[in-house]
Amino acid sequence: MKYLSMKSLWVAAAAALCLAPGAAQASDPCKTPNFMEKLNKCDGNTLEKGECVDEVYVAADEALNKAYQELLKHLRAQSAVIKEAHAERKAKGSKDSSGEEFYLDDTIKSLVAAQRAWIAYRDKECDAYNILYSTGTFRSYADVYCSIKLTQQRIQDLCHWGE
Figure (cartoon, rainbow, N blue to C red):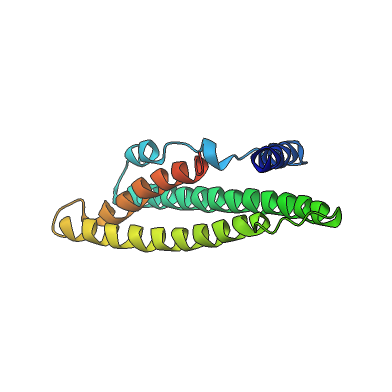
């Protein structure tokens, strides 16, 4: 029966989030443009191309941060619903001390650590990529190209996290 009650809590949490004011925001981080396509459309002289690449990088980074913050917000809201339901059951005399009311707190902590580790990975991966192209004409864009490519992938990972 515990599974059914947890399932009901998840459904209630999802419904509450979907029906909450502002849930359907205009800028859904999971519906971001393909930043690699935008990057490949950067054209013009070196200065114009550099400005375009910078704009794409900033947009990708903003989308990543938004996707990450939205996921954290979602998990925190679910955690609050579960804790409230657990408190209600406890008030009714339930002796359940499974700790289920805290497991999302641990999930959130792990996600924060994973995101920090991912940023370190992205930076090191792109450092290696930059070294590979350090003598070619692509050298000025190698690092940002790598960062945008990995950021685009991470946004999708965060948007489909837990599926």
